Image (cartoon, rainbow, N blue to C red):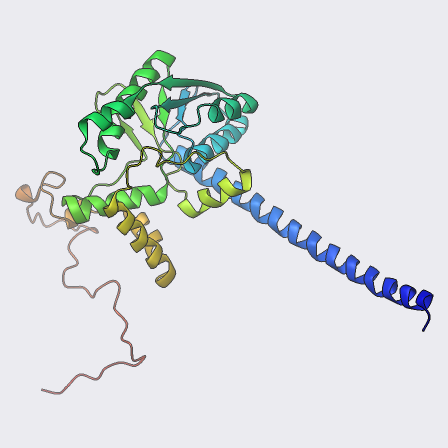
Length: 320
């Protein structure tokens, strides 16, 4: 076989192979684009649902979106801007970032990003880092004090900007983690509400991403290429107990699919009469009045969820 014949044969083999590779690459790109679009739609649907369920945003509101530079607050801003264009009501958005003068914080990233985005924003410069370092012993977690200082500053800024709602980027997993932290370590059935009035009674705080999973915000941040700013610039360690709760929930997701979703659903399906808090239900005044109550006691009924055995067959009862 001469060189010309070999070259023709090689070319004939390479061309179909290259075409096939291009087809596969195109199909892969189309699949990724489809999944990304589904993710965006899901986030818009869940955020819109939470806003509707809790009446978070109303006609004429000025929503102050607190942007830290983390994945969750970026996702919140992005989705709220999308929903604002589609909403049947008018509301304004102003973005606020608190520069706490932490070491190595890149002050140019957020202004550049927000300017390109074309959204109104305000950068508040307050050196809370020095205050925290002065008051908290070395090696101790600074997050609690830092959070209180940040909250007070943001409330003041909301007043100055005329904001009627303060939007935070907490998601479903944050809410569940707080619920378990309070139950395991605080002895309380208390979570992180989707909507609340501030301690001073002057501000309405909303969490539009209350129904959104953290894994979705993680992937959305990758898709959108948000310029993420690390949250550990201050050197403080993340709350160890919260890390344990997060690991527990992720382990449940792998081993027991649906368990986390069921617990989250339970938070909005509460029966105070079947708990033990006398402040929520008047046990002391409870009387048998002879009237049927569909939500009454089921103490003698079978358990609503039986625990399956590992044997796949019923265990015979012993005769007495």
